[in-house]
Image (cartoon, rainbow, N blue to C red):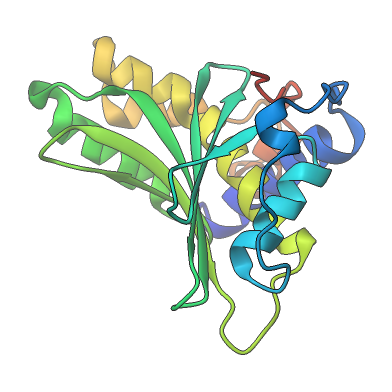
Length: 220
C-alpha cells in the first residue's frame, strides 16, 4: 500500500528525529521590545493557545495587524520560507501554511499541479495546494476542535508535520518548475527507498529508514 503507511511512517520518523532526538535546539534570543510588550490573548481562545505554544517553543513570530494570522520564518534543509498560522475562532479551526516564496510560471502550472497531486496521494493529514491564477504554492495542515480542546501537542504536530513535509518535497517542486524533470520522476526521486528489501516490504519501510537531517527554525 504505497500511500498511507509509507508517507505516514516517513513523517513519524522525520518528526521524531527533528523534534525529539536530532534537533539542534537554538538558544532562545532575548525577546524584542515588540515581543515583550505583546498583548496577551484570551488564554482560553485558540489564538492565545497557539501564541503560547509558539512562545514556549522559541518561535519568533509576528501578528498580522489585528487579524488572527501569525507569520514566522522557517529554515529547512532545502530552503527557507514563510509559515502562516491561521485561527478561525468562530469555526474553532486552526491551520498552518508553508508558503513557497516563488510563484509558479503559467507554463509550468499544469506540471506543478500534477507533482502536488502525486505528493498528496496517501497523505492523510497534509495537503499541497496551488492557486492556478497566481501560481502560489502552499502546504496546509489543519484541525477542527469543535467539542474538544486544543492541546499543545496537537499544535506541535500540526506545525512540525507541515514544515517537515514541505521541506521534504521542496527539491522535487524546484526541479519540476525550474528544471526539465517530469512530475513522476521528481516524486520517485523524493520518495525512493534505499533498502534492498522486497518491493512490498520496501514500500512500507524503506522510506521510513531514509536519513533526514534535522531542521532549524529561522531566527529574525
